[in-house]
Length: 303
Ligand code: FDA
Image (tube, rainbow, N blue to C red; front, side, top):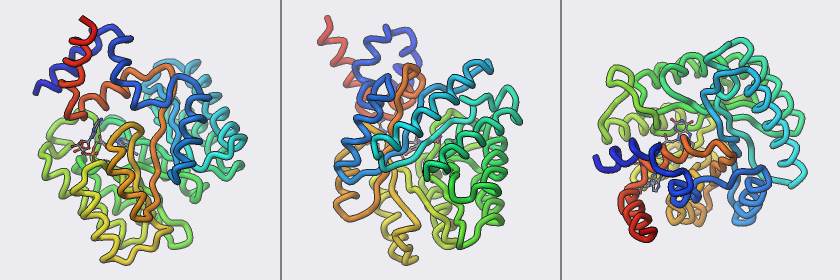
């Protein structure tokens, strides 16, 4: 409750203040920062997925700027020899302005990524975008089956039906590539499970479905219970190592991350960067169980 209250009033705090406890969640404001953090993670045996922050854009001029940023990321990843791929939010490319134009622009990014042997993950945003983002993915998957992936959220009631629909496109030669996460946006009960245990149990059901079908799965969670259950399930279904990875967010549960890496599993870390860090970091702060303590500490230290 207190976390929720504080996160609601965060926009009224000076940005410089919020930055103090947000900075661990982002690589920095420039592409050079993203390259530096990615190089460090690669050196620790961790793969990355780089995201340029900025979402829900409202004008096509900004969309073109965002496209140029992604082209730049692709070139720089190649130049710096970064082991990783890209994540993008379709609303940064005008999904809610013009769906067809958004498709054309994301398609250009996928073509560019493919030409550098890179890969594009389409992040999943709120329920206004779910159907549109799945359609976008399906269209791209038909043309570039090895260069594009999607995210499915365990809190969404529709997710099992969505996976059943996606399974129709799946083949062993070109597995569907899904990141499975709990889901972060505020959703009405009609769309999303609200209970903590309900979301956990749906996460495991969706994971089991994908392991049985031999999808490629990115198991994206910092929930120790789910990580342990996922490992049990991977063993039970004898999932080959080339069909899964664990994924975590930059700055979140580094100890659990290291434990997973030390067990020999592939780990990918989400590395966001850019000037537009506020919305992303506010979502992270809401999930941080020690946020209240950290803010009180920050206020105390400043005064
Ligand atoms: P949960 O929130 O229960 O956290 C488990 C534990 O992790 C907590 O008890 C705490 O100890 C720790 N923890 C979690 N967050 C923390 C924080 N910010 N600071 C400190 N500790 C923290 N969502 C979405 O809707 N669309 C998307 O495309 C993506 N993409 C995505 C990529 C990757 C790689 C990850 C890991 C996650 C996402 N998410 C996402 C976010 C996801 O939906 C979810 O909100 C977060 O991962 C938190 O859920 P957990 O499963 O970690 O459980």
